[in-house]
Image 1 (cartoon, rainbow, N blue to C red):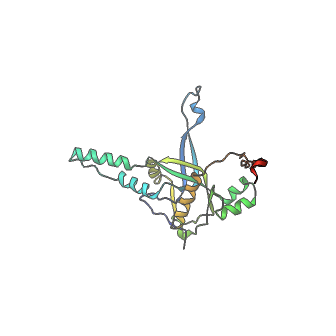
Image 2 (tube, rainbow, N blue to C red; image 1 turned 90 degrees about the horizontal axis):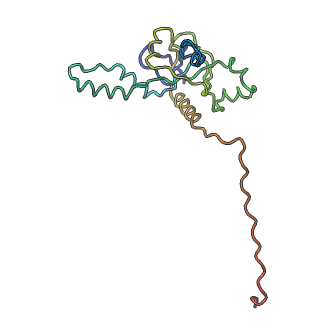
Image 3 (tube, rainbow, N blue to C red; image 1 turned 90 degrees about the vertical axis):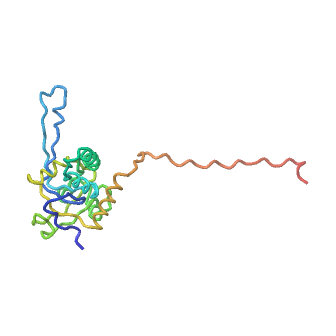
Length: 219
């Protein structure tokens, strides 16, 4: 069973879909200082990114964006617009993907990469290499690693527009590998931080010795 299939050419984006040449636009932090003369925009190009927003939300959003209003009935049109707004997803959540070669120098040691490839490190999720037949681009994809600490979002309408401006849809994760990814990301987000110095458990109190009985109490 292959973990990936080629992405669709168009239509709704899917959870577990690998995209390439993803452009993330954000304000320059320096332009927000009190002495800045103007607002400046910066672009970050992600060679690879993975869609994390859930399929059901993406599907509802896509259908809502393509609803045609009832121009003959204003009341009905207003009601439909309220329902449509409730189903829209303002931003798509994505995760940075990097190759194992790029990630290796950032790690503490080779044993960490071994655990990552076995999906035994909760911060990372390993994706095997994808052959050309399973890549919409036809080139195939190298081994990739998702870093759950490096997530970002892009407005949903912008992502769909960029699909016609250079963003490439590559491969779509299949079941049950998709459910495995979703479960591991959910676990990473629900971790509970503990203090670095955990106090030792309280020692039980020593039993209190009872005084011997008075002589007159002994028969």
